[in-house]
Amino acid sequence: GQQLNQSPQSMFIQEGEDVSMNCTSSSIFNTWLWYKQDPGEGPVLLIALYKAGELTSNGRLTAQFGITRKDSFLNISASIPSDVGIYFCAGQLWYNYGQNFVFGPGTRLSVLP
Amino acid sequence: DTAVSQTPKYLVTQMGNDKSIKCEQNLGHDTMYWYKQDSKKFLKIMFSYNNKELIINETVPNRFSPKSPDKAHLNLHINSLELGDSAVYFCASSLDRENEKLFFGSGTQLSVL
Image (cartoon, rainbow over all chains, first blue to last red; front, side, top):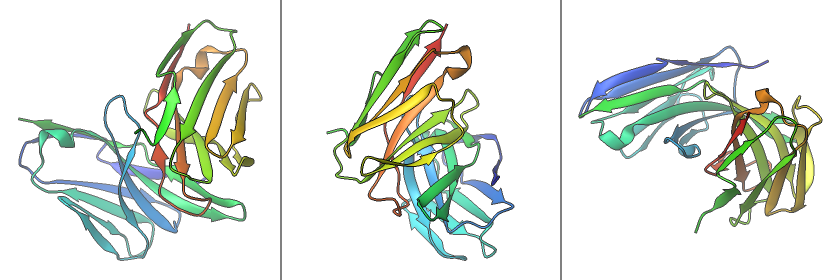
């Protein structure tokens, strides 16, 4: 079945640094999504990407949908302590009954003051 | 006002017991989901309902039975709980079966002893 890989698995950065994380797949997806999960909470949607090559920003977050539709990256600029959490990428697939999603294993981000 | 609310937040029970998790969304969405997050934080879909009708049923044991009394509610009943059922279960909803934006509840942490 479809599988997503995320790198790095975890990262420790200093407050104020920029962060970059990737998501790759052997399959093509219709839409790529980036979610953030805070401890003890459910994932929250950060950015949705719809077209190959699309670059989208949401505040300090920037994400791009790869040209091949098999990868995406998420950048966070000027990190702050509340950026701590797990970042998941997800690919959307279409079926005759509707949609389904495949989630990556997540990138765990720690921000040191 | 919590958009997707699930109860209980924590559930500790003995092997062999039967338990239920309730989920309600006040977003007016047509489609609801149950996801399982294992100890490695990997998110995997279990079920999806659209307007009270089952549309996705992944390879989940028959001991898991979802019920949707109306489109705002999707409950999960688990019979004969096993140790391997310990995980965090997330309810989610989307506007309809084609809208890519998922809204997650805060999760139910199930511990089977």
